Image 1 (cartoon, rainbow, N blue to C red):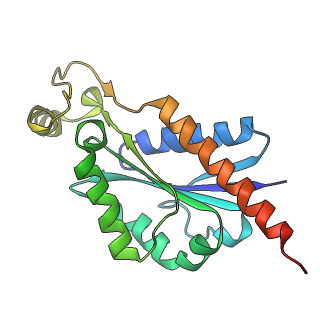
Image 2: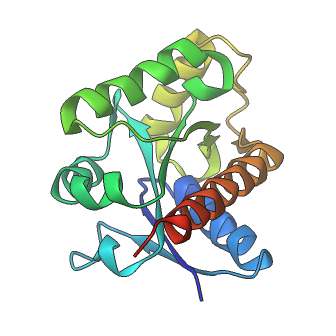
Length: 187
C-alpha cells in the first residue's frame, strides 16, 4: 500500500494540526500516512516512503532550523520521490508576497525546489501566550496587513482547511501520475 510521510516542524502547534489533517486526508483517499514531528524524531528515512510532504512554520522570519536541516540531509530523496512543501505563517493570511519570500529563502538555503508548494495561514493563540508574548504578538498582528485579530482574550485560527484539502488532493494526483509514468517505463 502507498505510504506517505508528512514530516513537519512546529513551534506552537498549528503546523502539527495541519500535518495531522493532511494525514487524515491522505488516509481518506485509501493510502497510509504518517505525520512525524522531525524535531522529536531524528531517524526518519524518507526513502522508505512512496511520497513526502514537508511542512514548517515561520517564527522570527524563518522556517525552523531542524526542518531546514532535514531537507538538506534528505534533498536527494525529496528530489527523487513525489514531494511537496507547506509553509505556515501569519503572512500567508494577508501578505502572500512575504510568505512566498520565506519559501524562496528555504529553497535558496537547501537547494531543494519542491514541485508543489502551499502557503497556509497560521494561528494567533493569545490565550496560550504569556503576558509579554501576548503583547508582542498583538503589536505584530496590528502592524500586519490582512486584518489579524488583536483581541487578546481569544484565539484566532487563519488556516483555510479547504485549501489544505485541495493541496493534499493535488499532491495525490501528482503521486498517481508519477507512479503511472514509472510503471510505463520498460524494464
